[in-house]
Image (cartoon, rainbow, N blue to C red; front, side):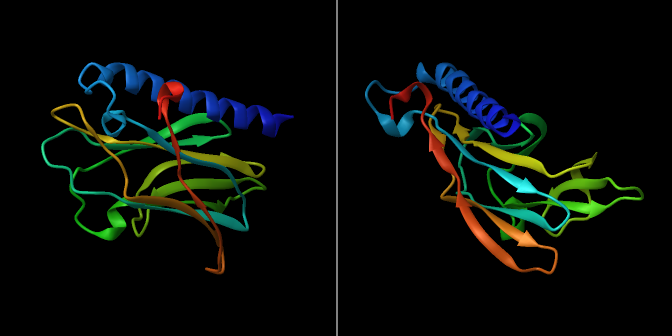
Length: 180
């Protein structure tokens, strides 16, 4: 029941964000042009526990004349906990890659850490006592003329503590207002 509620909450947040983004940029989009309508890309929820983390990989285009950068939001059990604003032009491939892993804690609880891949600085961390559901939502960058720039590719991959890679889950395009 709780898992179903978390999934519904993530879906509602994704649709609400897409609707807000669509409404704010619709005036600048040309009528009937689906390429100019912004879309939210989302993945999850995925279970993260002490034996399995996830690797989020994003291939983002360079965006000239960006008004707003790409925005990657992390949700834990359906609640937003952190947002990373990604530059319009990436310096390297790891700049748009993130991990969510559970590190052993001093007590029975572990520490969930979300960080840029290869970085030691955490974007967000917090104690957990059981497996959690992690979801991600990527908002497109927006050019000065109001047109969105979407990710070229985005996926989430499971990663065991021994480095073993598992399933891959693509980000799914969520069209605001169902007009995609």
